[in-house]
Image (tube, rainbow, N blue to C red; front, side, top):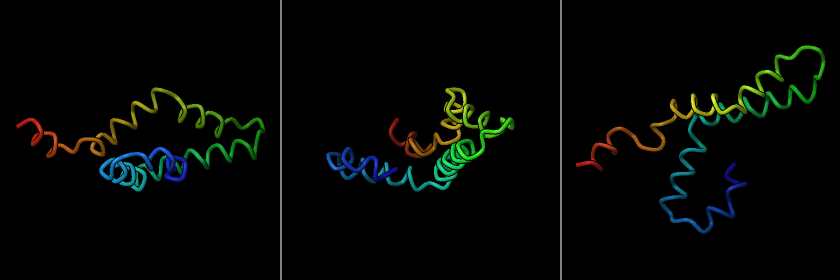
Amino acid sequence: MLRSLHAYLKTQSRRSRKFFNSVVHDARVVRLLDESISTVRRWHEDRSSDRTAFDRMKLIHSREFALSESNKLRDLVAPPDDHHRALQ
């Protein structure tokens, strides 16, 4: 993912690059990306009547899934301690 963002990140501040780097290397994000890639691969390799991979792929690409997962990853954007410091 960082390779895909390389041109964009090249023009960003050091702080932005550090933020994106931390997000991309977070274990939860890595697991989500790996699951997405492996699910699409399974679907491409086996298009039989078993719809398990297809159904999972569609779920992963849905807005509902994105909202659910983003709530779990919220601390990557604004850790609770930093948020409270910013408000003070």
